[in-house]
Picture 1: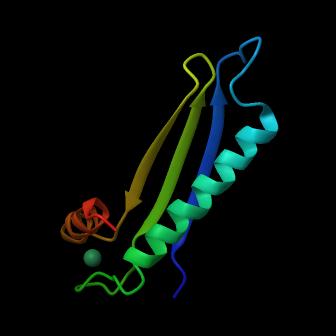
Picture 2 (picture 1 turned 120 degrees about the vertical axis):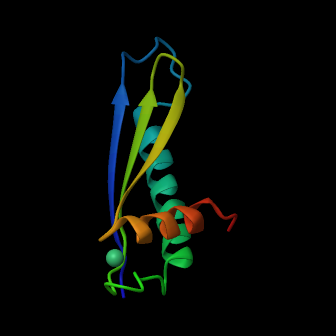
Length: 97
Ligand SMILES: [Zn+2]
């Protein structure tokens, strides 16, 4: 079973005169974040489906790189068939790998 994970990356704000990361390095960072987040989720949720509806959760990961602060903010959006399964998914998500 392959997990449904969507990624949405963007860069906010004007680049500084001498940015810490150039656009190529940013791409690389997004790529490696994507791979490690994807691998982590696939590992944690390999066999996790809703007990009631037999559906897997879907994930959308948003990453925003803020040029002004040179910081990366990553947010997880989780979609499930029902509230009860969402609670279970959030519990698994918050467990250390
Ligand atoms: Zn359900």
